[in-house]
Length: 172
Image 1 (cartoon, rainbow, N blue to C red):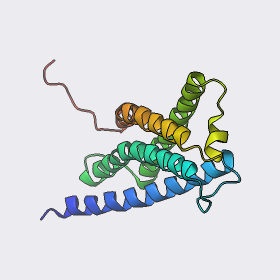
Image 2 (tube, rainbow, N blue to C red; image 1 turned 120 degrees about the vertical axis):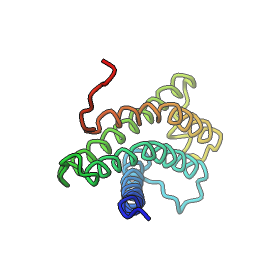
Image 3 (cartoon, one colour; image 1 turned 90 degrees about the vertical axis):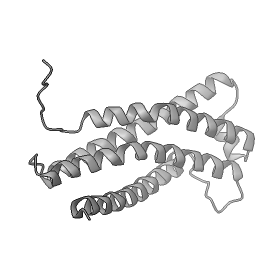
C-alpha cells in the first residue's frame, strides 16, 4: 500500500468536502442577499428552488475543475522535489478559488445578459420571484450549458498557474 498516495487521497476528499460546502454556503447567502432578499426555500416557490439548484450545480462544476489543481500543489509539496510551504499552498488555493468565484459571477452575469437580450420585456428575477417555472428552467438550463462549455477552459487556466518544477526539453 502506498501511504503517501492514501494520505493524499484523504486530504483531497477532506479539501473537496470542506471547500465545496463553504463555497456553496457563501454563494447561497450572496444569492439570497443580492437577488432574492425576501425569498427563502421555505416558501413554496419551485421556480426559485430550480434556479438556486442551477446556480449550485454551476458552482459545483467549476469547483470540480479547481479542487484537482489544489491537490496538485499539495502533491508537489509532498513529493519533496519542490519546497512548497503551507503558506504557498494556501496562497495558491485562495487564488484558484478566487478565479473560480470570479468566473462563476461572469458566467451567471453572461447568462442573464444573454437571456435579457433574447427576451425583451421580461424581468427574469421578477418572473422567478413570481414562481414562473418555465422562466426558471430556461435560465437554469442556459446557465448549466454555458458552465459545462466553459469549465474545461477554467480548469486549464487554473492548472497553468500551478508552480510545477522546471523541466528540460530533451528534444531541443
